[in-house]
Image (cartoon, one colour):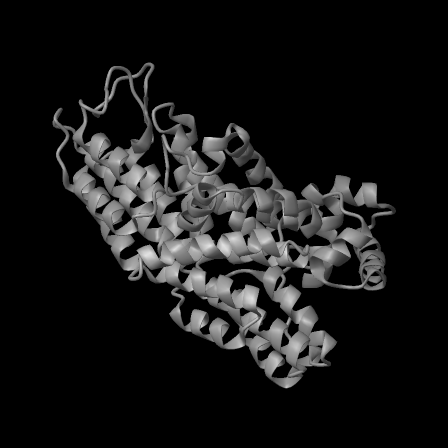
Length: 437
């Protein structure tokens, strides 16, 4: 490999190396330029440079640098939802070198692609295979990709404890410094997890707690641009909670940045759709939301846009029947994308319009035969330390309903208290896994 074992950071390849500088490795040199151009908002030029890095031959004759550059290209393309092109870059990396360490990195990149395609199970499986890189000091920085994917999958599934665990793994990266928070320039300039930290904070503690950090991400043009480039669809989440908090000024700032980025990159659909989405949210314009949904390549994002359409139709126009049509589309689309947490939230909106009988439950199947799916979800959250009120908020149920389910759970598993349930929980789940193997 084009590296030795001590010292200097060969950052943008995700390597730790000893004596190499950007002049020693052509792949590194080109990728550094691509990263700088990317963070300035010139997406097309960044793609061209990253493609050049992925085909260049390292001056030391190593195919490993070419393979890692190809995987960085795949990450960049995945952010833009250019999935076919990203898969092609992964195949290029596989063809460049045969090495178990590179195979592990490849698995992490493929996990992110699977997540964007809505295949949550495959994403988790690939992450589990790829996270061996965390034990390799040369490639450990790539583990952040796996932690990002696992945190997202846990959040979408409503697995609170797992979500918090993987979020904690990311916090050192995100809170290390401002440059890291708004784009890891030395390692993954196109893959900052800052937006994810805000979403996890909202899922864990409520939207009010997440507002200050959301505001910080739109604090400057460069930070807002870094967010939009890292995960275009995340900007709508931030604008939504800012508007909910009454901070239209900051929401407008994010909107203007998205519009400028879209104008500079009119052929990048992920960015133009994100800008259109922000316009629609700020202006409360249903027709713009419909255009954004048509333009989006991302199934989960389209579900989010349909939910927003339902919210606007219900709140502003009193068009409850049409709103329910969009809610139903969003609910099933979230479920298809492996996101029962989001499906359950939309189901609660359908219930308000007396359509709950048509709204299926979308929590994961129970892993304990004696418990129903809903009981299992309640028990898992309670065992994780949540109060009845917090469980009710997570599952979009009433506190009375949660208390009813909890009494049934105690009867079925033989627990006498919440503490006893928490102590028993790992054993109960573990016994079921052992039995099913």
